[in-house]
Length: 130
Image 1 (cartoon, helix red, strand yellow):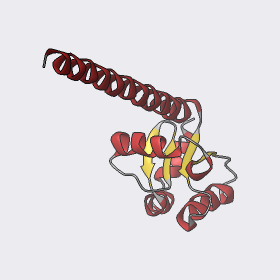
Image 2 (tube, helix red, strand yellow; image 1 turned 45 degrees about the horizontal axis):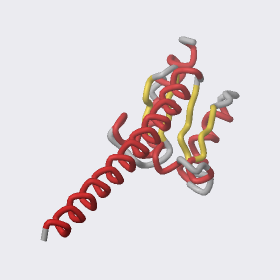
Image 3 (cartoon, helix red, strand yellow; image 1 turned 180 degrees about the horizontal axis):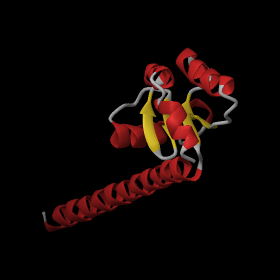
């Protein structure tokens, strides 16, 4: 009986240690993705978090191309940490859809938001501010 308890206790400790190790790995990965997102947003004039096959992302990229602006584009579907980055964006802006556009550190939104910002002059003012 005593030996069974010891085995169960050791087993429980091993399970807890494995759970803690996995939680630390996940936290490190999330911090890495979070750091990448923050760095991308604040180190670039224009950032588009995109997916290479998304028609709305194509539209956002085309808008900047027509304005002769070159955004920094992060293609989430082509990155190993793309899913983690998308979770960071969800925490940051409350959306997990693409595209997510930032200009001079300010979140513009998605494709429709970007189109509206062009039409009402907000985007041009943000671009001129840099």
